[in-house]
Image (cartoon, rainbow, N blue to C red; front, side, top):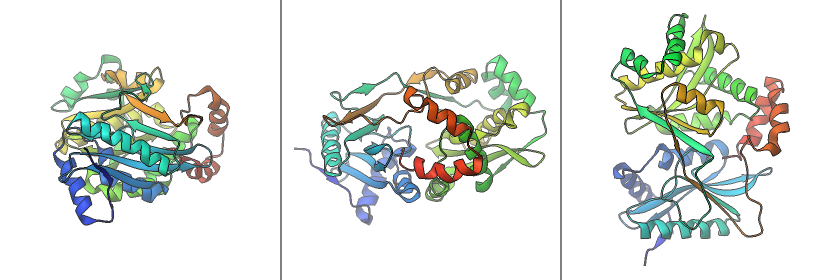
Length: 341
């Protein structure tokens, strides 16, 4: 019989056992790491859990217990992540973990469970159409990278390289200001500044901020994660003034250079919703979209948790939010977004 237990994250032994398993397992992502779910707990107040099997560990699932006055409660692997989910050495262990996740959700009064990637329970409702993932290998140098980008987008990058843009690293304030304006313009609430600070603090050298400026003014900025020779630009955006000088194009090209200098071999452009402009943008850079498989299970008689801003039910709210004064959006946004996960 496979025994699943809730890890004690205050125990050095349990934390070491989790870290040892993740250090060697081939299926891990940044979102399986303790640094991620504990930073989500610290930055957004969404409690972290791990369910684990075995000693030494042979399977686990990281979880954040999300609660929101607007969107209800859910147990998610992993909170504020595009990946996560169950990883295990065999199917029996994965099945036992899925059963334990559902049982834990019930005990925590979370009517919904969301697993993003990993080994998905076969009998849970599965979604393989909403999201696409985009990743490819990095080229050997700048010129080869340019040639790997399709012609039309390559021309945009070459123009960016002539626009007297500068690149610097580590400016948290500039990143938050740019990102907050970017998501406001898209009609969505900005995440708490504390979440970004917690991720940067927890990940150390495995996370950084790159900012593109024109005449000293920050126009585009991205917080990126580094995991096993892969770079993932995760929270990035640009102001309205970024487009004329192609600061966003410079941002991603400069990050490719930065990643090569750090020894990375692959660029993970993250996920985008099928049929969106964001997905088209990534294809323009030469990335092919691959369907991502997620599952969401909701208790009988309960409404499914839905936080997709493309849902027609939210169209009016998205339109109104994009018109808010930035100071108002930045004040209200974190109070809403900390429960989205």
